[in-house]
Image 1: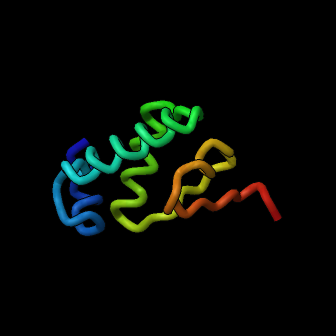
Image 2: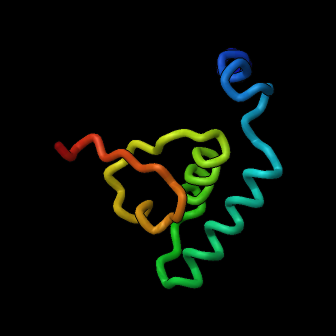
Length: 79
């Protein structure tokens, strides 16, 4: 685990990728999804929040991510 943390540190600027700002973003994503009737799994919300916080693209064919406003999504199975 320590090796992974060290390899992530230059990318994210810390020993841990968790940030309170990610938790806040997760809460907003989760609340919006629930309010619109399309709740995401906890881990999906966390992944989306982390990607958005670090300006990353989520590569997935999971269509539920399309409901997350502001999330950049790439489906590698589409031509």
